[in-house]
Amino acid sequence: ESNVNAPRAMRLGKRGPKLPGTDSPPPPPTAIAAPDNSVFTAVLTDVATEIRTFKDHPQLLKVEKQTGTDWSRIKVFLKDGRVIELAGDKINSLGTASAASILAAAGVSPTVTGRTGQQKRN
Image 1 (tube, rainbow, N blue to C red):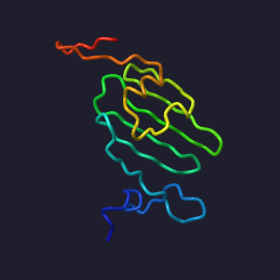
Image 2 (cartoon, rainbow, N blue to C red; image 1 turned 90 degrees about the vertical axis):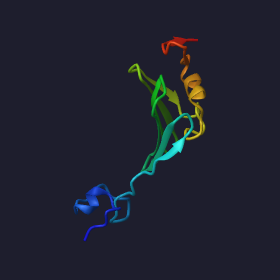
Image 3 (cartoon, rainbow, N blue to C red; image 1 turned 90 degrees about the horizontal axis):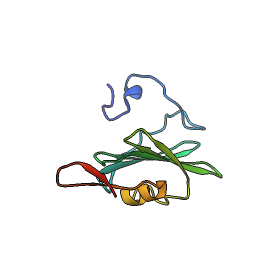
C-alpha cells in the first residue's frame, strides 16, 4: 500500500537524488504564500535555492536566489523574456521583499496599469 502523501517517485518505488549521508531523497519543497500574489519556495541541497514565483504581476515572472558557502546570486526573470542577474546581497529576504523593491534592485521601472487596462511605464 502506497502513501498518497509521499512524492510520486517514492510511491512508484523509484529513487530520486539522495540526501548526503542518507538513503532518503530530499523532501519536496513547500510553497508558502508571499506578498504581491506570489509563492515562495526554498530547497536546501549543497546550494540553498530560494524561488519566488509571481502569479499575476505585469512584469515579474519569478526570482531565484542561490546561496553557496561563500557566494550568492540572484536572477530576476521578467515576463518580456529578460533575465537580470544581481549580486546576492541586493535583495535580503526574497520571501518578503515587495515586487517594487525587487524591480528597483534590478534597475527596472515599474509599469502602472491605467484605466484602459494598458500598461504604461513610469
